[in-house]
Image (cartoon, rainbow, N blue to C red; front, side, top):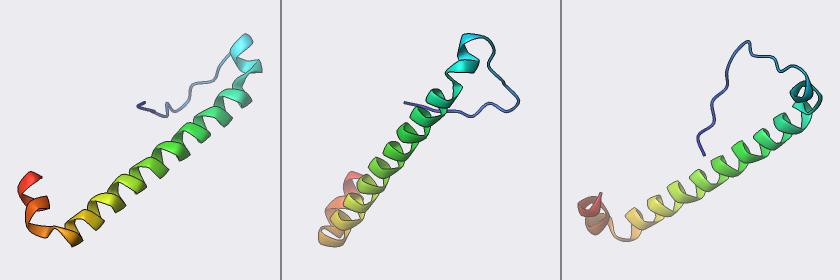
Length: 59
């Protein structure tokens, strides 16, 4: 999921009431995405350490 932060946008009506929920869920999603990215990068790094020649050929 691609997340973007839009500056200066304030919700109104119903969405103003649920804004704290939306913000909290967005932060959770962002943190989960970053954790997944970190795991993928670390796994790739570990693979390159074990198989440096094959990893560079497949990149």
